[in-house]
Image (cartoon, rainbow, N blue to C red):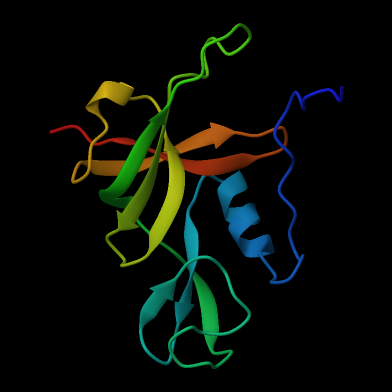
Length: 139
């Protein structure tokens, strides 16, 4: 029987698309997304060309990190060793900039996570650096 990993894998930049700007911004706890300068629209996940125009006229831009839960689920797995991590709320968040991201909902009661709820950017610590997550917005 193989051992289960004890930590999340570290992010890898430059596998297919140069994602280094995403990870560098995340290390500063800033969220950046690709922006098509031809159409004025954001895209996520990162790609080598614009999904709107097909051009390489794209750049990385900082975004506010606010949005609405589009879809969600709560993961519950009984058993030892998972205390503090479960239940885990996971959501597809539609950012105000018009793109959707799948992310954990942290610092929030999973029972309160629901479609239509507003969220704001939060961060999860990785072995090296940070990864964007969201928390329920107040009010």
